[in-house]
Length: 466
Image (tube, rainbow, N blue to C red; front, side):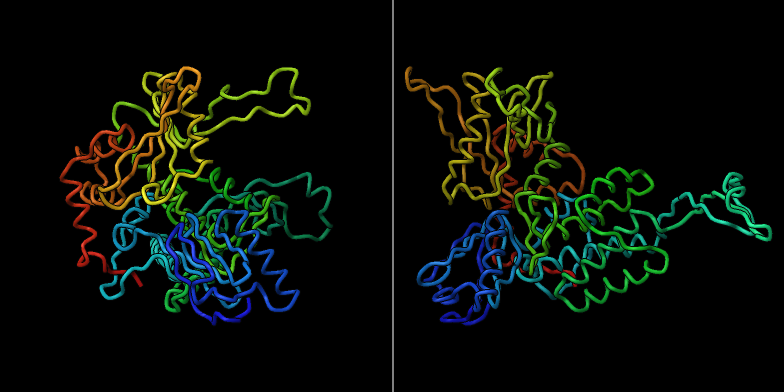
């Protein structure tokens, strides 16, 4: 990236915010200097756009940069782009821990949390360091693994077939298949690789040294594993009650790995010069856990496939393709019947217009419920001001309404208040808020007042871990 007319520095945005050449850091900028560097940066910028992480356009008088649902920071040549989430401080940390099942940590009293700067990955890195420290203090999980070797002191089962094939006349050993109890298995290998990755990503030098030190404690007995698309399903299969204590650490490692790269069409991941965290996935994970644990009377299904909603017409599918199967984020089921379809969209639909692709997607869900059906977009809000809106889908010939798309705000500050006060328990407040989110009921007024208190200036500066 050239510095013509812009200088170096950090361009700070909020999620879904756009800045153009009228900004001093973007005026007159061009992508790359030489022809080779220009092509390299252009390819990287195109990949950011295709993956929905960041939209960068080169205009006649400079650059245009548009943030999406990803927050964090990324370097484009000499320009550092920083995207901050609107919710920060203690409420964000509370919701992040709840969504991914992380432990509560003691916070340092002096440093304010700014989860959208270069230190966003440091929040995850510190959590990972605490989780790894806890695992090491308890002792790493060991697993019995088969091993075939020639042993002078036989153990396990003697392999007579191998002995007859390979034994020499003077060999003082026997081929044995035994099962030593070792630390070098997939879960511990992923932990080692995750600590090494986190040590490369974090900004704080003290935290970087701590993560490297924790990784060094594993290296004598554990080998690293490549963190790629194949390792996560293998870790899911390897999980059991014996490795349940590893789950928070593995979730953090996966978040760090996802935020550090762009996955291409062939499944390979290209590293990013920075770290971008997908708030859309976070929002969906948060609502999934909250509604699953606190919504009474109906059951919740994540990404329920709507089989049969769309299909190729028999005889008119020349390529033999599979019929499309929409999967809404959540389906509410009562007595075996779907009563509501909900989609979580991390976009402030009170301040920002509803994109047509979101509307069309939810319109299909609503129409699938028959006349009078509805589908709901759940979107984040900060405070009680945003209220539910409805878009009616009409039959033009009859002039009557057929279905509705509902735009329902979810007050994240309210959610943080109720989760903190409930302390992991189901209470009247959690149940009432869950019904408000899923079914549109009015939330309790005491929660609204408590949420408003969280955004007063005195409460914004909160401690952060080091």
